Length: 80
Image (cartoon, rainbow, N blue to C red):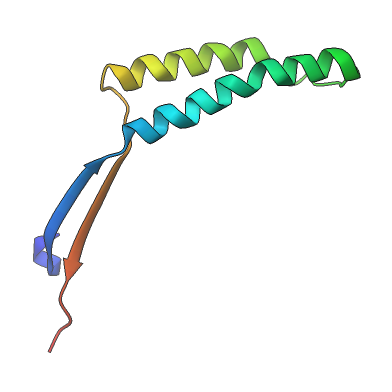
């Protein structure tokens, strides 16, 4: 990237935002289950148990540093 004229690199770990997103999804799943039960909504193609399992797996991967979210920014001066 330096060869393309980029400089002043900044790397920021935003894995906490990823954990917040997964936590938000996990908090909403019981509400979806309740709505399905009360309203007799047909969600046969949606496996809520699998969704919960995947959310737990994602949290574990993030906490172990296997998966993350990183923001990389740089500047590029205008050519003269």
